[in-house]
Image 1 (cartoon, rainbow, N blue to C red):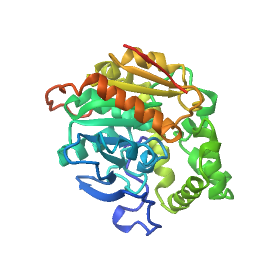
Image 2 (cartoon, rainbow, N blue to C red; image 1 turned 135 degrees about the vertical axis):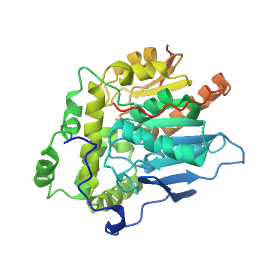
Image 3 (cartoon, rainbow, N blue to C red; image 1 turned 180 degrees about the vertical axis):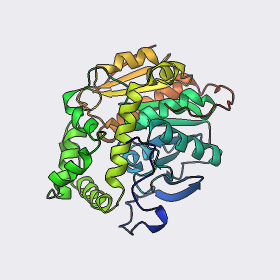
Image 4 (cartoon, one colour; image 1 turned 60 degrees about the vertical axis):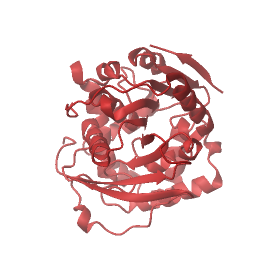
Length: 340
């Protein structure tokens, strides 16, 4: 079953009502209705008018909430928006059921084109990092700078701890997994996710844990939750097998925007060994390595990531972005160094 097959869930107009999404102080949620998709966007009021826009893209199973710790730390330098990708957070499934990397990238491009916010400082984590890479490669006019936190770029030797996530892409695995874990409580599920994604799960505050449990309870009531997870996981696996000009590493080499790469030494999903390859692929990139961080450094070490982004801005002086292009999105403690 490909990720472009029609979704096996009811259309958004007949989806059941679920609890409201959590909104942190200073944040607001809005819905953006575009052809074939409806996106929920989380935003913050900038410290002053006229700041350049930023857009944040979450990873597999995440949502715009994943950026709530980082965004307020940058209120004085960017005008922040974080998007819920189709089928995640508070965004309903896409009409065409396309959860591929290209499908998610098209959603980001459509939003930026419709809002007229580009070029933006584009951030991406994990799946969102792969999506952001594709956007930056094919639409350089939309991207001022690129910040990637543990981007899901193809690895020849995938870490053993990442295999269960990849298995979600296989037909029938989600159904089996849901049967096997039917008795798991939301608290147990959140502990498992935290242990997988954090270098030190103890960094999650009691309030943060309670909020995560509430969000897990909400998502489990959505009839498309596992479908979106499986199809997006399949999209990552499919992207790993694509070569030539559409391969993600080849597209990384085409990125023109100044790039900040952030990798965690305890990341169980994206191998830390890929950091140096990424630094070579993204021309003139900066590499920030956090030995104690896991897969979501912007949640574990938001101050450090914010400082690195500020240094990127200072060093690049906001260079001019390449001219517009009509190309579509195609289918298929810290150590800091400078790569490329």
